Length: 73
Image 1: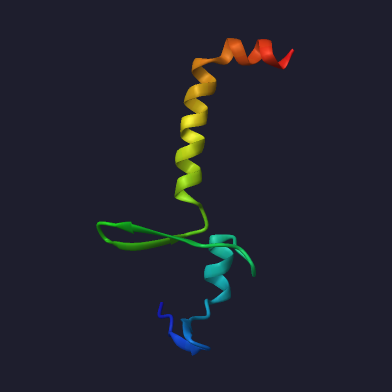
Image 2: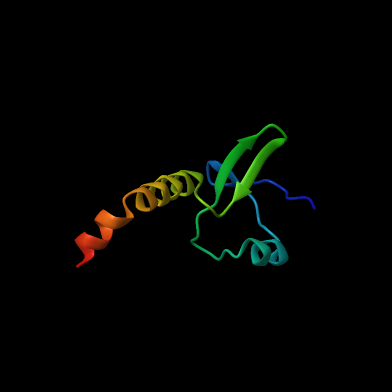
């Protein structure tokens, strides 16, 4: 599928087909993130920094489960 770049003010922009936006589960105003891979650039609605942060949080919560239970009382 092709996307065509167009001039919008001093920038470039593109329109996305509705079917692609539905597959990404995004709507107007949502953010998309770019991630460089060895195969090119990946565009995703998921913030890779947030994913990394949540992974760290899950490890900490698993490690300190008993302390967190006590704090929740």
